[in-house]
Figure 1 (cartoon, rainbow, N blue to C red):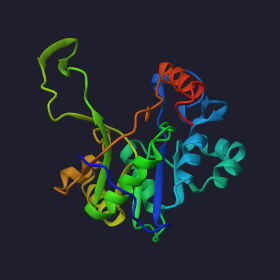
Figure 2: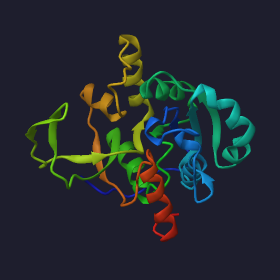
Figure 3: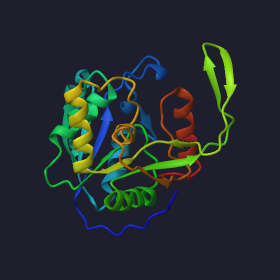
Length: 243
């Protein structure tokens, strides 16, 4: 794992923000990206933070088809003000949604990042390091140590305890040279393999035999997927630990 310094030219990074999930773990009500944290929709907070990075010149939001009218009516002005250039409908799986975003990314983009809509507290320094590393090595993902003891389950039965040596947690933003990400997605489109078994984009790069570099993540890059996560996000804001 490595920490990288930001040494890249400005203005050639496009960010795809998948926001098309069903949000089943959050329960009834609006889908996760449109819930509020600190009085602001999570999606807007996430995009505003991405817009703070000088290398980012466009943000593409991939939304649930049923949400697009609402976004255009209620959020478009604010989203456009923080760098969102396009809102496109998502697909049946996360990977299909990312592909829909990738299809409309500007040809100017030398680097493409994919970032979960419900991770508003990612570290800007980590993002800069990821961009710098991806430029040099093709692909970079944020990782954090795996501190718990992992178990392998079958139903509710524990089959074995897995050694945690060498295991890390990963999340987003995941950052890639655009030509590499387009290549792996075009291959999967040709072979019809954009299934729900694909849980992140670096998985596709790994499967093609390309290198994925690891960059240490910040402390508070939580993914807000449940009511407990929502309460934690509010607590972090109230304590001044995140912005």
